[in-house]
Amino acid sequence: MNKQMRNDINLPTHFMTDEQQALADQAGKFFFSEFHHLNAEMDDTDDLPPSVFPKLGEMGYLGLNVPPEFGGAGLDFTSACIITEQLSRASAAIGLTHVAHDNLCVNNIYRNANDDLRRKYLPGLCNGTLVGALGLTEPGAGSDALGSMRTTAKKDGDDYILNGTKIYITNGPIADLVLVYAKTSPEKGAKGISAFIVETDTPGFKVAQKLNKMGFRGSPTGELVFEDCRVPAKNMVGKLDGGVAVTMSGLDLERAIVCFNALGIAQRALDISIDYAKTRQQFGKPIASFQMVQAMLADMYTQIEAARSLSLKTAAMCEGLEEGEGGRGEIHKLTAAAIFKTAAATSFVLDKAVQIHGGSGYMRDTEVNRLYRTGRVLEVGAGTQEVRKLIIAGELLKN
Ligand SMILES: Cc1cc2nc3c(=O)[nH]c(=O)nc-3n(C[C@H](O)[C@H](O)[C@H](O)COP(=O)(O)OP(=O)(O)OC[C@H]3O[C@@H](n4cnc5c(N)ncnc54)[C@H](O)[C@@H]3O)c2cc1C
Image 1 (cartoon, helix red, strand yellow):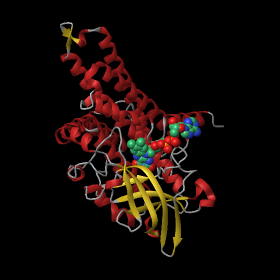
Image 2 (cartoon, helix red, strand yellow):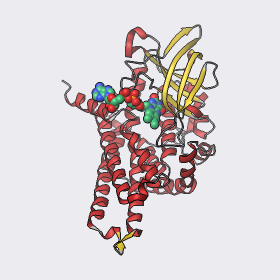
Image 3 (tube, protein in one colour):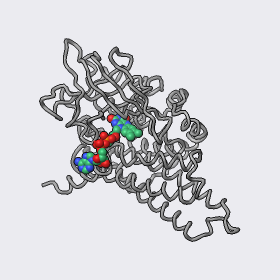
Image 4 (cartoon, helix red, strand yellow):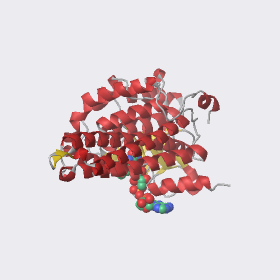
């Protein structure tokens, strides 16, 4: 951990500064006016409108943590998290697609690639002309993503030949490039993995299928197949067999930022539940006048605030996380704890939100129903709740 950067954060880590609040307000207004109205159709068609990425790029919301010299916004990690919450509040699906692009793919490339690769790919990824994805999970390698990985990359002259399958890849069906993990030294197990940038027009790459999800619809998820896919050796990100460091450090940041996808969804569910409770009348009064409904709203608010405090503290602790750091120690434990708590809080909030909406909440076309179907996966993606607990306990019991 870069101590200097950590010590520069003189503010309590669980509050937003006035500047950060202003950033949140500005981003929230923009995302609501541009994206919220797209949600119902995205839920029906499961397609991402092609205008979304260029619009995000034009407004400076891509490459959030990438310095301006490579085309990015040059923001700190906490600001990226705050923007993620606002985007997810306006459109959960665009929020997830944005995180897969901007954090999993772009930020990992920026943190781990050499300057040639940064110069080649980051400007397009930051202006919305290129869409990115990250391919780690495989049909037989989910929670044990590294140990059970079957995708291989074999050296052949100046290239590597990739063979294997990646599944549940966010943005996979629309990506222009995928940051892919593959075994370069299978005999070394999890220590023989390397990361590659694969352009999706490379012969041997194909989207085997777009997957039909229950939520986050409009954020396309796919199964990707590599059949003798020839990738230039210079597209390796990080060191040969150095993929574990890239993955584990990236996964900590992923868990930290995904907390804010969850918070955006939970906050939106609370906001619409308050509105519904004030307007829906039963027994001649708004249902908000009934104490049992009030109790649900109070519980929802408290869960969100507790999760947000932990998430903001975690985001602050991620500032200055250096290349190769993470994947162990305090930050590994804290990021796992933050997403564990926030995902559980989000599930709780969504359940209560549907309850407050009564029968209407069970109707597929309502916003609360869409949020409910969407939020469930936050207990699964970026490592399941069980894996998160394994990480926390593993760190607590070390030594
Ligand atoms: C919508 C969506 C988007 C995704 N996006 C991406 C992406 O962009 N890129 C990517 O690489 N991946 C992505 N994923 C994959 C995601 O990270 C995996 O689904 C997740 O890690 C779990 O793996 P699995 O689905 O194979 O479940 P499994 O590992 O098969 O787990 C099944 C169950 O067994 C439990 N379990 C497994 N091992 C243990 C253990 N040791 N102890 C206790 N319980 C255990 C799990 O907790 C779970 O309850 C995405 C998934 C979804 C659903």
